[in-house]
Image 1: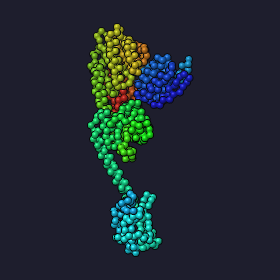
Image 2 (image 1 turned 60 degrees about the vertical axis):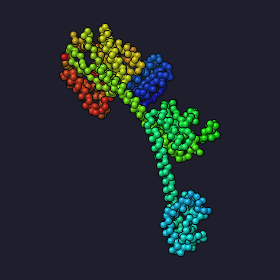
Image 3 (image 1 turned 135 degrees about the horizontal axis):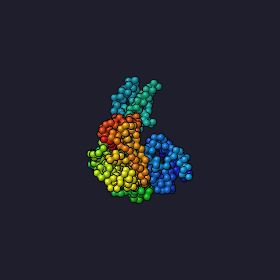
Image 4 (image 1 turned 135 degrees about the vertical axis):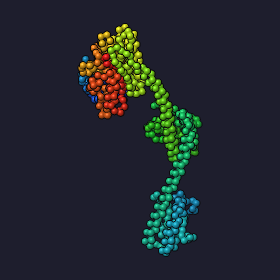
Length: 113
Length: 515
């Protein structure tokens, strides 16, 4: 899995590509840990547009990061979920725990609102 | 010049004549037959051979050079003939002798290398014998340092082994001759180049301590410079090419011995872990009930198949005469031992809360569990999807709460199967559980299948998932059968679908049928 990132004001956007699973989760976790350590408050958007699959370890990684961000007065929000990935968030009702946006720009806008 | 003072090349030419005397005699005979007075071979002013026997041959009418590696090594002389045709022949013969000389020289070189290799093999054999029985890294290093000092004929040696990125240990023989700072800087250099480093320490601060030279040889284990061999002060001079070659052989041997030792130690660790995992598996299997309670109005079957030795799935029943029959199925995120530990905790808390809470509806049980385990889940970055169900026999009401769990399928005896979707997030995600009590009328012939995603996400050879649609169809097809047959039929269908592919995720299922 590839990780790219760009900034939108105070917000950092993490772009993932490929399968987000038990094998790639440690890499994503490392990236998130670094951002959460260095940014105060950590406001992160994870753009999942190019993610084709997520497993429970990947979900746990996102949940963990979201909890940490909120503890540190920031947040981790999701955007651009593809249908199969969105379905997993709906079935596990993680859509009730995360703020999920159709488009990255909307997520950015919601942070500044 | 006498023959005794000849150069190495001239002596070799002499050796060629001795070895090929027949050839030279034929050439000489041919010249003498055609009228020449003598035929002789010369090098560095000395006569190496001459025909006819005893002739001095010192007034040649023709001379032709014998060449070796671009230089003249000797000459062929003929007395008494000097025609241009004869001169051409003599030049051709000198060319032939040059080729013989070149071949002889190559042969000598090969012989030297063979002897060299033989010596090295013997040395390495000695080294192998000496290090064979060491099962501790420290012992092996001491032994290797000692043997290397001996084999390379130097004043001291040391073996270095990197225990982690920033830590290494060193064993010196016979004493510590170098400080760690110099060793560290050598290690940094060879880690980049992956080839040996030869340092002349004359006129450096180290020369005061009696250090003259250092050969630092990287040892590569699993494609990385993970160790090094250092050789200090070559006796009687400098480290030369044969020393470097032998040190390379020792380094290679050392690398493979160290790798064996690492593998050996890893396999011991692994077998220790294996014993622990076997034990954990036994404990876990005991946690999953094999005997199912008898519940009035319900036919029941359940089972669990972990993907690895221990799993993160669980199921439990609480059958207490003073309380409605309660059951749960859960799936802890992740796999292996951490998931298994949380699974055991989850199951225990579920059972306890069901037994001690005054009115344990599924929603209450779920909320209590979440409060109890939220911090633990957060600590280890995990969560668990859980389904809690409760059957009230008096009015055949089936109450349930679903915290992010799927698939749960309800198949009424007179209708189509439907997915009972979750309303709450998994336990451990949010401080409060959002799952609320739901209820349905569970009549005779109705079926409820609570499975884990190891079923719906089982995949076949084309990476196609089994999926919910197939699951619903198979359950409908099996719904007239008893709980155990439905359970086994589903297992069989899914294992046929994934035909021989290793199971990716734990597979757990409870089947309830109204009777």
